[in-house]
Length: 361
Ligand SMILES: Cc1ncc(COP(=O)(O)O)c(C=O)c1O
Image (cartoon, rainbow, N blue to C red; front, side):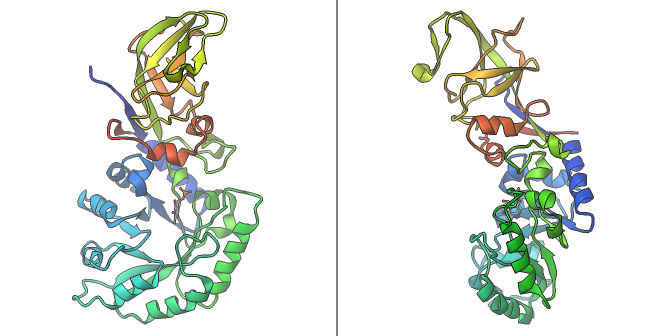
């Protein structure tokens, strides 16, 4: 059998998580983030599985085309808009919706001279403190008026993005929210503010549309909780197998640099087909949890490119071919992320093409 490193994605869990969003933000439509290969879960398969959302959010026209050409009819929003004016023809053909965050994008719309198949649907992005994309409060009025005047544009509404919504006691989210609403008072159009942390922690920010990403995949955006704590279901479980077992004598070390030593007694070590060449984090510390035969053990030594080692001295009957779960239902990705000094977002996005990502029911 060939090397089996598989990320299984549960459609049922994805749809459950959509329902959690719906229950929390009852009056809001859902713009589901599927950018970055649907946070590593497989762009097309997730776009198809998320049949109950109102729109899909991507980072580039390539991502948008990929979904559309796979037959997905759901509205697709280019979250960073166009990167150059040539993209507008494809935007027309495929009815993509644009975020506009910069005057050059308005100018490109203004200069569009081909016959229109339909008006360009546009969200205006406002910077209320994230200082990443969006018109500043000082620029907002100009951008808004310019867009409203363009006959080729159908103005949908305005959106902003929170910088610290995952910090439940940090009032800066409220300040961003207040600034957004102050700027938009008397302005037409829909409002969209909340990412996952906003949906979960800041109900006043739900507005007309919400933009969940991480929570759809069943993980928590907060530092000290797991998706399960929030009634979410992990959509992904990452699987591999044991490919070797060895006895390591007291005083012997394991792996590159000998970063782990069997102290005072002999240890049983299982080698697993999973390494940083698959996307598993090299930074994972000794003791990062792994499930072997559904039982929790910890990594020992450095993660290699194609393999990692775990101490299975406490387990009976471990053998080559036994199943291994690196994260999933019974092993929260948040815990693995903490051991590796990173966040679930990054773990999801690290997979290389060696990992098969497949949808299950
Ligand atoms: C503009 C915007 N909205 C929403 C999201 C979704 O955020 P989250 O995955 O934290 O829900 C992102 C993600 O990076 C984003 O960039």
